Length: 137
Image (cartoon, rainbow, N blue to C red; front, side, top):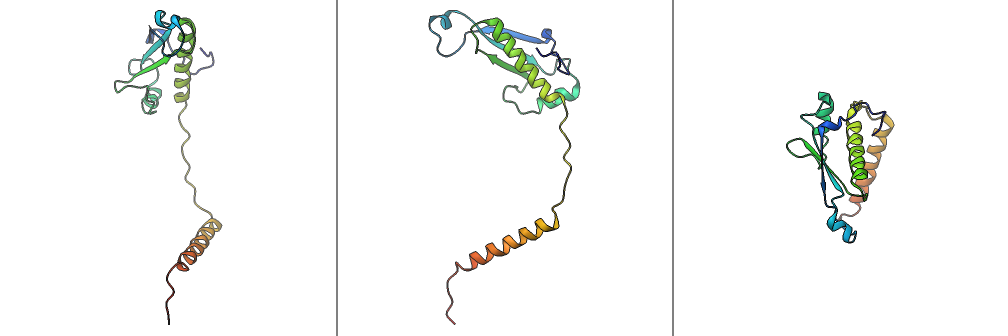
């Protein structure tokens, strides 16, 4: 785990279960449970309330309706490496939600941009007007 994270994850709050990995891998993949399912209950965690709220509202598909984050790591051949990879991904997700988003400062369009927009609208209207049927006088 990264030592510079603002809110380090306590490993007692994380549940890890070893499962069989998916995909190709020969005979070894069928008899060794090397993939890791990491479960992290956001509501029961020791994270500050604002970080928990941002994490729950992040819209990540790995977060269940109950507020449990499930991460599956299966890219390595050993349980230890997959556990470390899952914890690293969890910490990265918490670190991304630990800083509040910058507030949007509303801006106004400049006078020149308004004039350009109106000019473009006028030109576009002229192009469309030329497509109409010719009227005999």
